[in-house]
Amino acid sequence: MREVEISRAIVETYMDELLDSLSLDVAIVGAGPSGMVAAYYLAKNGVKVAIFEKKLSIGGGIWGGAMGFNRIVVQEEARETLDELGVRYGPFRDGLYVADAIETAATIASRAVKAGARFFNMVEVEDLMVKDGRVAGVVINWTPVLMTGLHVDPLTVEARFVVDSTGHGAQVSGHLVRRGLLEVPGEGPMWAEKGEELTVKNTREVFPGLYVTGMAANALAGAPRMGPIFGGMFLSGRKAALEILEKLGRAEKSG
Ligand code: 48F
Image (cartoon, rainbow, N blue to C red; front, side, top):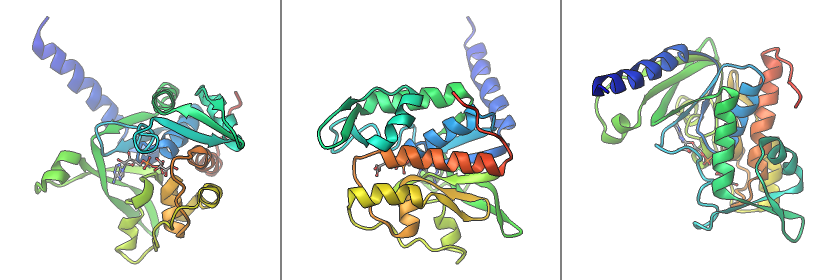
């Protein structure tokens, strides 16, 4: 066994996938619950989709549940999506259901990867490409480059649609805000029921070619945060995927 062959195996296969991902149907930014669910539904329906995640680990805010208690809560409306993904959950009082945060993050990630979504972790989207009034792709760099402030230019990935799934900070939409192309009022204070309802409603194309999901959708609309209830995140990811599928002229596959 030659060490250099191990290196070749990693470099060649990674680079093949990166090269093939320079031109995408959909680039999703952020591998939290809403981004991963969107990726799953898109990949399952034959869309060429990649997720760029700035952290080493994917999963965003799922793993820690609330305050590190690794449980997440979902409501009735989200059960269908969890069933489709194969995440187990049990009933609690008051119409609520509880799932294990570790199982949720691991299962959704696994289903998305197996459906064909590509994950690029440790890659931060530092800007957007905008051409003729439409978002045309993302500008990417290694997270450690940005963390250390090294003066290294980024690369670009073109995409027919970009999805901002970056959570509370709506970081990607922020690149349009600083150019005066979009407004981000920021999320409102906690109100679980309203926040859950509005995160789905606020999931939409906010600028030609740019969709927002999950908490980023509420941040853009000034709508409430909701804490550790996750149904809205899953439904938001699904909604964005289905709308993009329609715009790409792809029919949703059943089952
Ligand atoms: O925050 P996050 O989990 O987003 P979400 O899908 O879900 C929110 C919930 O986790 C929770 C909540 C539930 O009710 O309120 O907070 O809206 O995941 C966002 C991911 O995006 C990554 C970040 O590291 C996280 O994993 N991210 C943020 N900015 C960038 C990014 C960026 N510029 N480039 C790449 N990844």
